[in-house]
Image (tube, rainbow, N blue to C red):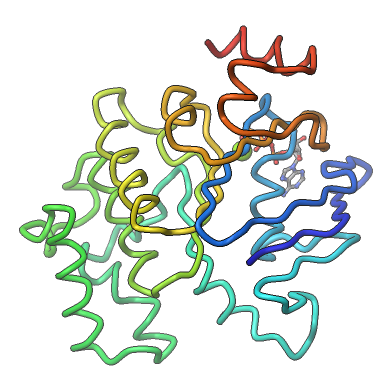
Length: 240
Ligand SMILES: Nc1ncnc2c1ncn2[C@@H]1O[C@H](COP(=O)(O)OP(=O)(O)OP(=O)(O)O)[C@@H](O)[C@H]1O
Ligand SMILES: [Mg+2]
């Protein structure tokens, strides 16, 4: 479904991604772990071209994202992204936040978008909050709204960058449960997370990154119970 081929990215003289290649198959739940600053967010952002790699290619369903004939905005809608900081607009209600992109981009009519938004809110038990502003929601509620907002576009795949790290501990579970449910429903996901207990149960594959490269890759069992690389062992001992 998604393929990154030999991508490199630098900011000025700082080479942040070094010749990274990875593929994501349909239905996979790929989790990227690694120490702070190793390039996880940059890699995720290169996968949907929010950040453009300096070298290498990203192919989504076989289409090269650097190709000028590819409509990158259309592709991005198919790769819904969820950030650590929710990114809801504070001056818009929950419902207005949800329908903004599809109506502005004229992908859906107002009525259709509202109907779909309400049914998605209902699925996460937040229908009664549709006219609330983000400031009136808890962190966990905001993040769940951000997730279903991305789903309104019927994405084929979703990218999550530390979706629980801004949350109070008691709210982490409601967000990870929603992600688990999405996974069970077959959504293809690429997730950056420090929430190791969640990752162990959730990931179909784990990538350990350090210093801009992929150091080790395997099933959750291989990575957590039988790590090979010393750097990975050290990282796991710190986060455990
Ligand atoms: N827009 C930018 N401009 C300049 N440097 C950047 C930019 N974004 C990231 N970097 C640098 O790239 C490196 C990797 O950053 P990145 O955010 O990808 O790390 P990370 O693995 O996601 O870290 P964390 O776990 O703390 O989120 C860091 O040295 C960072 O300072
Ligand atoms: Mg990051």
